Amino acid sequence: MSLRNMVHCALSLVLTFAGLAGLYLQLNAEFVGFTQILVYVGAVSILIVFAILLTRSTEPKDEPATVTPWVGISVAVGAFLTMALAVLASPVGKRLAAPAPEVSVKTLGQKLMTDYVLPLEVMALLLTAAMLGAVIIAMKDKEGQR
Amino acid sequence: MTQLSSYLLVSALLFCIGLAGALTRRNAIMVLIGIELMLNAANLNFIAFWRFSENPETMTGLMFALFSIAIAAAEAAVGLALIITIYRHFRTANVDKVEEMKG
Image (cartoon, rainbow over all chains, first blue to last red; front, top):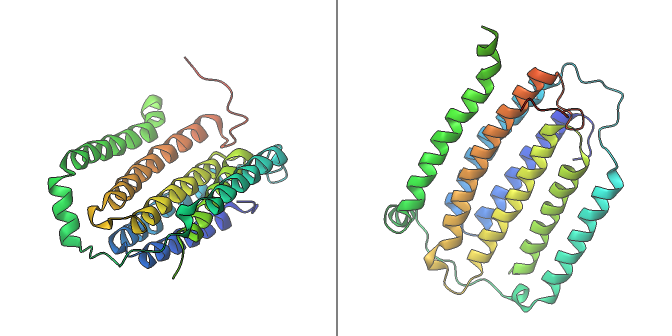
């Protein structure tokens, strides 16, 4: 986050996403872990790198990358201390894991098609709308010039 | 055996790194990256609480994390399209310099 070169920032973001996928695998959430790899390490990071490369060329190099960094950093450190104290103080944190549940992709798909079918349909609609919206937003300037 | 609190601490650290980035960086893409980090911290919380819950067979947290990943992907796509449009219009991706709207 504090690196000056934004491509380095994007690459460390990919590393963070891959590490998170490893944590998901460790927590017996295989499907979510592989989805994380597919969506974040595959798609979102490519999008971010392309956006960085497309918008970088005319940025002035000498101006500082951050504005009033101490306010934001102190807010974040304060939030982290609060959360860490709350986590360490609560008895929930001491809980050990239940025996590993059997979550196969088959049961996951059956759940998605029975209990969670309405959220699934809404999600499909949202993804379609987001894709169309992204294309239209990115195209608008070009069409206005014609 | 790892405790729940260690996962929660990792998630809190990730959230705060994302928060610091979103609050301090000037470039709109870096703000978006900070938001992505915070969303991922929330996902890690969902998965950890699901794994350490009383009855993980219901798979509620897992489903929530899946839908949250999908929403985050849509948000990233729209956000980056907006940033590219703003960059074409103002020739900058600096959030402090984009001060006017047409409406």
